[in-house]
Length: 401
Ligand SMILES: N[C@@H](CCC(=O)N[C@@H](CS)C(=O)NCC(=O)O)C(=O)O
Image (cartoon, rainbow, N blue to C red):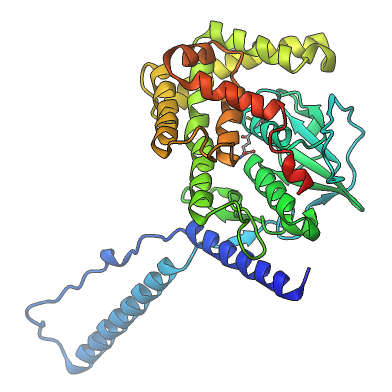
C-alpha cells in the first residue's frame, strides 16, 4: 500500500474517530444560575476602617464569585473525560491463551479465498449472532462455531468482553479478538474491499473508548462500528447516498428492530418455554451441553426472560399489544423498500442493511411471534428471498474480485 493511501486512510480514521468522540462528549449544565447579587439600599453607619474591611470583603467575595462562576462555566463546557480502553483500544486486542474449547460446528465456504481462520463464539438465536452468521454465510466465509452456554458462559471465561458474538481471527502471535456484531461486519466488509491492508490494520479503525455516562457509570463504545473504511474512493458500484442509507438502516436494525423481539418472543410463559426449546433444538444443546445444564438453561432462561421482557416492553415503549409494535416496525421497513422501488435496500441484491434486518428476524424464526409476523404482514416474501440469497452465498463473488 502506498504512503499516500496510508495517510489517506489515517486521515479518514482520525476524522471519523474525533467526530464520533465529539458526539459522545456530554456537557454538564452550567451552575451559574445559582449566583445572585444582593445590595443593601443604605450602608449602616460604621467606622472608616470597618468600612474598608467590609468593602475589601465584598470585593473579595465578588471577585471570588466571578472567578468561581467563570471556572464552573469553563469546566461545564469541557468534554467529560474519555479514555482509550487499553484492552480493546486502538492497539489490536490480541489474545494468546485461549483454552482448548471444542468446536461445535464447522461451516465451509467453498469459495472462501481469504485464508482467514475464524472462530465465532455465539448463542444460536441471539439476534446479533444471527446477523453475523447471515453476513458470513452470504459472503461465503468459512468459520468455526463455538456454542456458548447462555447461563454459565464458561466458553468465554477467557474474555474480558462478556457478550456474544465474539469473533476470533487467527494471527501470527495469537488471536485477534473482534467484539460487537456491527464492528465485525464493518471490519470484514472493509477488509474484503481492501485486502492488501490485512485485517489487523483494518481493525485499528474501530477503537474502543470508555467514557463516564450522565449517571456516573463507565460505558464503553466501539468507534465507527457502522462505518466502512475505504482507503480512497468509494467502490464503483456504490454511491455516497446508498452508503449513508445502508448505515442508517443497519443502525435501525440494532436500535429499533432488535427491541421488538424479547417482549414478543417471551410474551407469555408458554411462549418463553416454546422459544427456549426451539433454541435448544437449533443450537443442538443436547450435543454440546450435559442434560442438567440444558434443563437449567431452558427453565431458568425461560422464566428469567419472561420476567425481563416485561421491563423491556416498558423501556422501549412497545404497545400493550406487543405484536402490533413488531408489525408496525416491519411495515416501516417494507414501506422503505416500496418507496425506493427495489426488492432490497441494496437494489436488486441485498446490502448490509438487508442482511442486518434478515439476521435479526432469523433469530426468532422458530417462535410463535415469527409465524404471527408472517400472517399479519407482507414480510414473509422478502424474508424467504433473503434466506435463499444467504443460503446460496449470494455475495460470494466479492471473494473472487
Ligand atoms: N452491541 C453488541 C450487543 C451484543 C449483545 O448484547 N449480546 C447479548 C446476547 S443477544 C449478550 O451477550 N448479552 C450478555 C449475556 O448474555 O450475558 C453486538 O452488536 O454484538
